[in-house]
Structure formats: structure tokens, C-alpha cells
Image 1 (cartoon, rainbow, N blue to C red):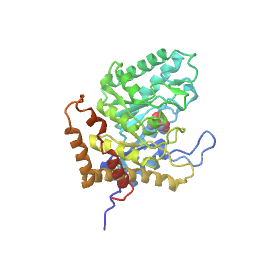
Image 2 (cartoon, rainbow, N blue to C red):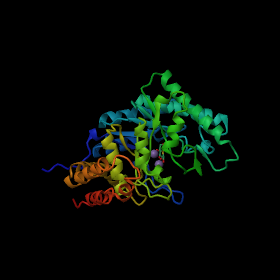
Image 3 (tube, rainbow, N blue to C red):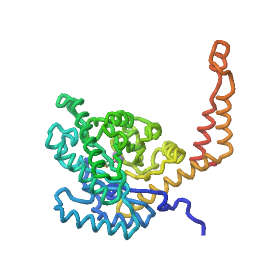
Image 4 (cartoon, protein in one colour):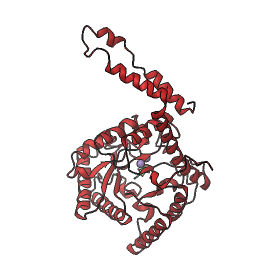
Length: 377
Ligand code: GLT
Ligand code: MN
Ligand code: MN
């Protein structure tokens, strides 16, 4: 029997947030269209499909108002499901955006009591992560932004943000947890503007922290595109600084609301270069899907979404392999190298004409990649 090249395996390290397949399709204009899925059901179904693990916000698993006895019961039941279905939890995050308490921000709220509450909530989520065996703690500051810049000085907001993250790294060190923090940038939505909107701004902010070593980034493809940026370059900058601690894979059309499309479903060439970068750079962290099934889908469509996310990654990975073994593509790459290594050693008056006239052969390369992705090679 022919083996299916696109069948996900545990060692592909595919992970999904509980909130992704669990998304009920609510949007600003319409109500939920699907029932709530129990976390244990998600564990079971994703495991059957070949996923490696699950990620979660504290409140995807434990309701805000749960007593500590309820919390322990829920966590135990969840751990049992993880063991039964051979799933791990490599990353945990904290919900600092849903509850109305956070409407003016969490770490950057103007109210000190809310800032303290947010920090304590994040510490408890880190403890939960430790309990579940996670080594990455993602912080997406979805409410850390503003509509009215007159209401708070953005310099204060950044100082509070810094204080929040410093307290978390201190918590991790003092408890001797084997955990690192990955900050996730996003330019806007749900706030009019979110502080620290891009990978570049996050990296520069990380340089100002007390314990920068413990903090990296969690770039998301869709968030880069919402800012009109090229995710490949954002991810490359994180890799260049050894700060790619985690990644959120999805898709997005530029200049739209936050779409959270299935990975690789929209911008095929863009997704190809993202996978190429991840594979060529030897990124070995989880391949985490942070997207939503279309609102048109029922339960069956939800699992198609999950299956499709993983199959697409493997499909792109296969295309990357073909890129590296295709004789004609290799030939063009060799020609490009040769063009750059030969020719005059300096740009000066005697070589101006050469430098002005020479071509770079990128059209040919780009066309070959297009044909590769169209399945014509
Ligand atoms: C939310 C957001 C994502 C973040 C999640 C982690 S929650 O769905 O849109 O990009 O990664 O907090
Ligand atoms: Mn994300
Ligand atoms: Mn997102």
C-alpha cells in the first residue's frame, strides 16, 4: 500500500490551541454557530489525526470563577486524557483580553489593581504550564494598546509592560521552572493600536528587560500581514537573534480584519517561503496552528480544518525538498551565485557600465518556483 506522504506523524510536532478547533465561529456581527467542544474531546480527536500536542490559555481549560478544588479536578481529568491519547502540552498562555476587567489593558492598564491582577493571573498560568509540562509561555498582549493616547502616556504603558514581564521572569527563576517566555506581537485588533506591534518592536523591547535571555518571540503570520509586513522577514529577524521560541502558523489577506485563516490556504508562495525558512534554519520547536475553521463549518469541517492544516504544512515541506533537488532550480541558483562572484571586484568608473547593465536572473527563479507550486514540475 502506498504510504500517504501527507499523513502527519507525532514527530512532525504539530500542535493546536484549544481555542482554534474549539472556536465557535462567533464574530462581531454574528453569534456562535458551533457547540462548545470539551478539551478532552479535542485531545482525543487531534491525537487521532496525528497531532503531537495541545496548547491552551488558562481559561480555555479552567473557567475564571473556578474554585481551587474545581481547578484541580479539571486539570487531573485533562492530564488523564493527555496520557491516554499520547499528547503533550508544549506551550501554555494566559488570557488577558477576554474578561471586561482588561478593557483598558492588562499589564498596561491605567489601574494599578488591574495590573497586579493581570500579573498574578499570568503567574498562575505559568504554574499551570509547569504542571502540564510546558516549556514555553506565550504572552499575547491583545489589550495592551490604546484608542485614546491622551488618556495615558505610552511611555508609562511601556514601563508597566516591562515591569509585568520582569515579574514573570523573576517568578520562573525563583521557582526554578524550565520555561521561557515568548512575546507575540500584533499591530491592532482588538485595540485600535496595540503597543509593540511587530517582531522588531518586540525584539527591541526584550533588550530592555531584566532577564532578556528568558524571553523571545512568538511571531504570527497573520499579525505580520495585518501590519502589511512580510512574515518571512519577521521570522528571519527572530531567528537571526536566536529569539524564535515558538511560532503561530495561519494565513491572512493583507489589509483585512483578523481572519485567522487555515495555514497555507491563501498565500501559497508566502507559505512556501515560510516553511522553507523554518526547515532550512533547523527550527525544531512545535509547529503551532493558530487559526479558526471557517464560520460555515459544522463539526466535520472543524476536523477537516485540523487535518488540512497539517497536510498543507507537509505539502509545503515536500515542495521545499523539491526546490532543493530540482536540477533546473539548482542551475539557476548556481548561475545567480556565479553572476555575483564573477564580474568586476569593485564598483568604480571603469565598471559602472557593467553594474548598471547586469541582470540578476530572478525572473527565471521566480517562474520556476511558481511552476513548482502549481505542480507543473
Ligand atoms: C488569540 C489571538 C492569537 C493569540 C492567542 C494567544 S489568543 O486567538 O488572536 O493570535 O496567539 O493568546
Ligand atoms: Mn497567535
Ligand atoms: Mn491572531
